[in-house]
Image (cartoon, rainbow, N blue to C red):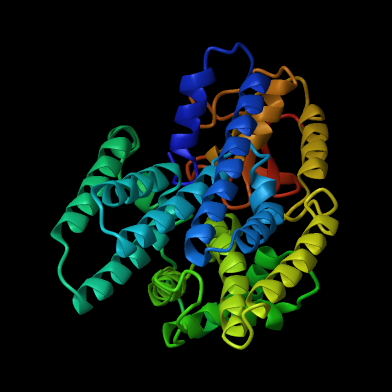
Length: 423
């Protein structure tokens, strides 16, 4: 049980459609759930921006831009929980901002529900939630302590604990906190920063797509909302009563929490775990630009972000995941599938094959090819003739001396027992 398993998404798909007889049906229903979450995200973006600006054309334009951001709509077509994950980020932000404007019981508990469901989908929701808690603490330090808000947050975390309790009981806490995806690395910080910088530059590409902005312009647009921390929104500006500075505060704290987590863990986060941030970054950058130029000419506050949104949207459509197979996962899925399938089919028909836990994909291909193979999580009774491991996985220590590598396909390595018949 690893934190990338999208537990809530799989629970929903299995509970609602688990009665269907074949796996392809569950793949289709999973994609349908992601599609619904994607559409709901666009609706939340539009509704939030209408409340923010009071300008429906601007809200519609930016919501449409969010809709064609390839990292969002691409995962809206996947049978995974990332579209739901993005939706819950937007719901948490919208309910928090609404609660700051008008504290109500519904807003308080709506935010708590969004937080609990966000954790239940992918636990890396922690990065946003820490930023939210820090922002709430700073806001209340300037006004008054709101004990009911903190009670709702405690209840949300309690719900998360109960949701993950089966995983903790069956797999243990280390399955969530000590696996290779979240276990901290220890080494010279300077060396890690040098290694991480190219990936950090790629984050801008992931957020803004191949729109032709360039990394420097992309980062400038991403950091533009920070000026709202000290920018006086003039009287008469639509949505002026909304907490612009508090939104900027939440945004900058989210960025700082991510940077702190990256440096502390010395881990590079998957871009798909930043889907909610990228969506907000895209929208908020243009929204801030509209606020700034709107202080000069009110018509420019509507025209400039809409024109830029139209240009970026067109670039998103022209440079989309269908044309760029590396866009969503960093490698060509279709080509990797075909290579993996061909290599699994080429395994000798005589002999036993085992798979490491991280090589679940070739295990699935072996099942599709009709080969009886043990589940990767099963304990092996005897050493198999062949073993398949992933690039980030190793042979069992007790078996490793008996095997030698014979082939590598993509990120998977094939091993043969030294004392068995040749490959």
